[in-house]
Length: 175
Image (cartoon, rainbow, N blue to C red):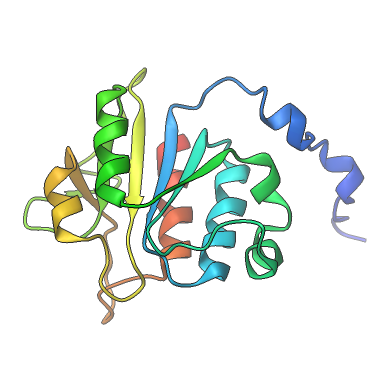
């Protein structure tokens, strides 16, 4: 055998209770009207992987308990703290009043490029807003955010699946 895969028991993962005792990461995820419960579940699983502080499920975004969320979250909906907020704009304003820098992950006229035009400032808390699968982050939410961040793309498509975007941006924020 050239390279043995590790067994789950060898990975040393923490329990959901231990997750909730982790020191704050200074990162939160805000889901703006995500239609697919599977995308919501994937966001939970990715948030868990990177030790994110909280997930805000806004508007029509599905909320736990949900079989569809659980299918892709694999239980991460039980480890990552979350809350539902009726309107994304309300969540953005509340986060800002609590000292968070709120970032729309969206292609805008003045968006900064992930990896080159934007760098996370140590000690600063960031809430990342990810938008609806069809229409993206609502314009009034983009307007309320402190800045916009764009994932550079080089192919023919103009967007990524929202769950993929969550993974790409969170990876860049924690690395």
